[in-house]
Image 1: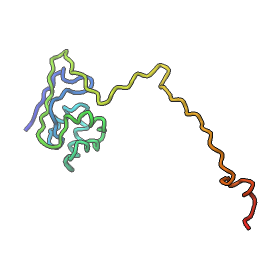
Image 2: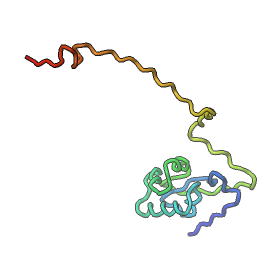
Image 3: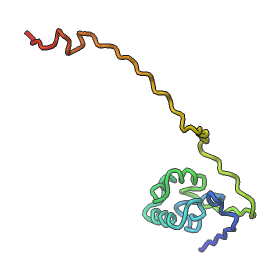
Image 4: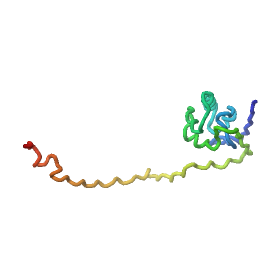
Length: 148
């Protein structure tokens, strides 16, 4: 069975591809895997070769594919599965309409000041207490004396 997917010019956007549904890493066709944002022909070949040796048991195993890191897996997690059917399809948007911005996983950092990053002041040096004469190995009473 051959699945042909037509992609309209408005589907691909600057940050990736628009996709709706889930892709099963163990059963998806190469064409369906290429719908995932950031996944091209080379990574698809890596996924197919990996799953021929052994099926994916978890989504996190995807980091074993060259070029796919934890950050990419985090972004793709909502579109990935290791069991069940693949329900993914390309989302067709009319030209001129943009997809909503992706929801950030982490809170944005505050802008840096023009003077550079803020630095904490170095802690003030603390005076260490002087050891007592009985604790000092080189005190006058212990120095250069032999035990009887």
